[in-house]
Image (cartoon, helix red, strand yellow):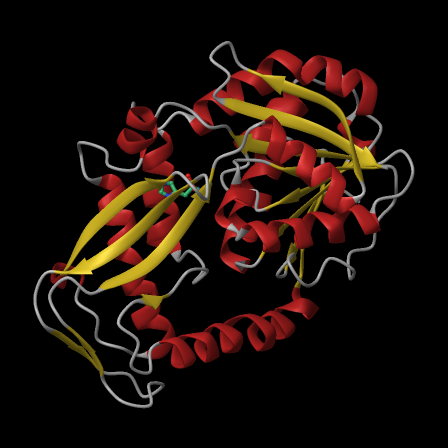
Length: 327
Ligand code: AVI
């Protein structure tokens, strides 16, 4: 059967394991600490649009570079793996899988299954629907689930290519990213491949510019997290009370993003034990974005049981598409 189907049965589970868990984390972390942490509040609609704007910024190269690598290797990949089914973790605007599908050189897409996975049902629905418009014969089966903890419910028909583009892996804590990759590795069968996008370490000025763009889109993206939090826990954060801060943490090989209070702030939520009081300069840690080198890739191999087949990179060595199989 061609066309897009959304796996509705999993929606309730996502609500239970995802949103409530996030609320719980927020309550725990905001009871009196000076630096609070709200990473992993997942993107709402506006956040996704702002992220798409970021990907078009001159200063932000990962998305562009990854696509340029993908365009170069797509026909070779499809020659080798065209008969596979494709699972994509966090498909976004589906532009990357489209590059692969466009490289099929007249192959009959009726036989191709594409399974996008995302915690947001809206994201899955829009990605699946628009992909079916472009590739009417493609069989698209979207799953709204948290792939960090729920990879199992998917009915797979191996061999499978698992695509995890965009260096989204970099937004997880290092230990968490290894756990996710180990989990993926355990579910891979002989012959399955994982195509993983990784943003590489590059000059500090380039990284700084990418997360402090002149138009302030990244700042708007960062501040909008507070709107997502407000939606989630009925709080009254005001984005204008905070300034955007992003810098390279050289020891942890990651860009860190914060929101810093520019005035005394008091935030109320029925989910807080007491109102959150922030002084000028108090910060909220909103995001990490890890950057990798060959030693990190080797560490991934050692920790996850994955075997590295290839590393495809660009001339500047700023981004890598790494291809793994089960070791
Ligand atoms: C989605 N993710 C890979 C982006 C990144 O670069 O870590 C999110 C982002 N945050 C600020 N700019 C882009």
